[in-house]
Length: 517
Image (cartoon, rainbow, N blue to C red):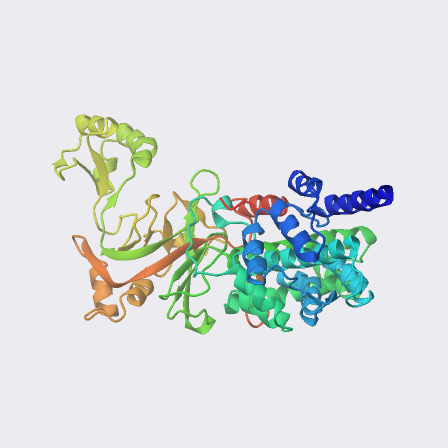
């Protein structure tokens, strides 16, 4: 009589080990003591404690284990997505939304959408609350519940803050977010049938983000529309289409789709609310956008062309900081690297090069040294520096905008305005040159008494610098987005100038759990 009982216990243990996957040791120990979990709550605890669930595409649960623990503890370890063993309406609503996450720039496979649909159908076809429960039923229910909770947490977090931490791609980029309780969000999702509304609420609220999503849906529709693909091919090549050319176009379309997905990911890194009207520079677009309020309504944004750092050896860093003051008619304190590599060789060849271009050599205590070999030697030895006086030849033009940072990057005017006629404008040593600096000055000084366009124009041609603190500091975000969409449907794609998209694409290919630092 004891042998059949032993077989049943061993079978139950085998099922439990299969459910837990990689976290085998602890459940085995519990089972050996005769206290193996024999209900969904027990199996739920074992799976979450193991931090691994092998039935999922991405089985490691390190990124969600703490949130799963909080959510199930609040629910007293009852299933979140089942009632009497049957999937709830909320479960079916979330699964349907996970099946459609490609419209949000995510991959349904990362969230086990197909497997969840199959498991939900299987559970729905089972008798509700069978009188004699089995270990197999408990495990199937727990597997489904944890899988759907994991998928929901990952999708919500992806939409709320992005999958990959921005610091992984850009170590200098630090963005603050409002507090967000993922376990609360999961509980709200499990208690509602409006999965679409809750997923929408998790996403950034910006018009440009919504326009990118709409563009992604339109471009994805081309994958199934051979007629439109052929028409586009004919318009592009002005020759008859061939299967080879159609294949090329499909590859081009796939690249565009990926660019849209990566751009959506980058938008999700941003705070969901700007607490002051920001200035955003998009490096690959060579464009600046200065907001007049905390919304991103295109009609209320000052946009202008900019020059950014050279792609090969002077990349403009991706970071965020706060603009604190302006300097009208500034000196240009030449960075030591530029002085050493560019100016000193010219000064040695031509003794008149520095004075002719309004450069002077100064000590740390601001003493101006006479031009000559000894002063040049002092610069080379680090005992003096080169600066350029205000005026028509000054490389910073009539005004510079300072947001103190570790990179010594700032925005400024330029006397060389012809560069803005070029399509590709990665030409600087890292700082950002502005096509319309006077307009930006008027925007950031608005509300400060006495500052109008006339005074700004005058002070941009002073003989000596004038520092002007901002009454209201301005957030500055130097970002990198290679696709921009407008509410009217226009989409512009930009070259991956610094190959940051390539890096992000590789990081996303790693799968869950993604690195957070």
